[in-house]
Image (cartoon, rainbow, N blue to C red; front, side, top):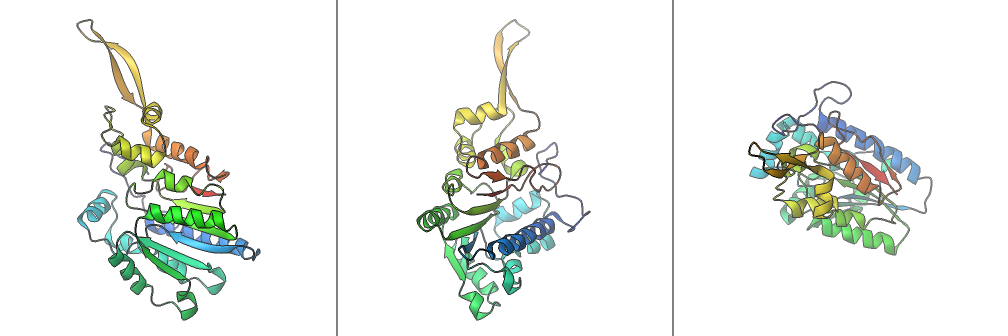
Length: 282
């Protein structure tokens, strides 16, 4: 993602393949799913799981969601595409199907609404669908534990939250499992705003949880200090934020992913020129 001078993320111009950013994102993901399942089908040893940690109900009507949509310049028609990820995958031909699909949402009502929305699937596919309400991070930990217990499982994890809800600790637990992951990094509109220019970092706990770093490490990555002398000859220190923080955020997160997975996309799919969508494989 990129930001303007006011740190507002910009949607890409409707040029190239796909039209809008949301459509491009889902088209790319669908292609990845098809390639993934084609490869996995050649080895019946693997029992595949699709895991969406922030599936939603198909609608975003809460005030905070609508405000963030405005900040991201996501119009209503694009939001409908954004919410079509689950439906898009379930409409794929039978040759591109997982053994199980897990759709997670924090609220039970949202999970029930999504289940009703996906009621169009046939009986055989419906038996493969699992809807759970609860914290996405807690469900990720359960997935990791299951996969470590039974090595026959291979999962494709899709994490596209409206914010920084994904805890690094829950991702790190997937290390050593047969997992592919697609994750949205909210580099500009959210993370960069928390990294204020003065380095006050009032949301330090959230930043540490997001990156999996200590406070000292976060400050070292994004800030520098320099000795300065004022007009009266008094010496002091000036804190300055790194140049190009958007790409710095993405590169740092990619580096963290590299501590869990052997193969990490070096140049992720992005809304503009800055990385936003790293995908990793074990």
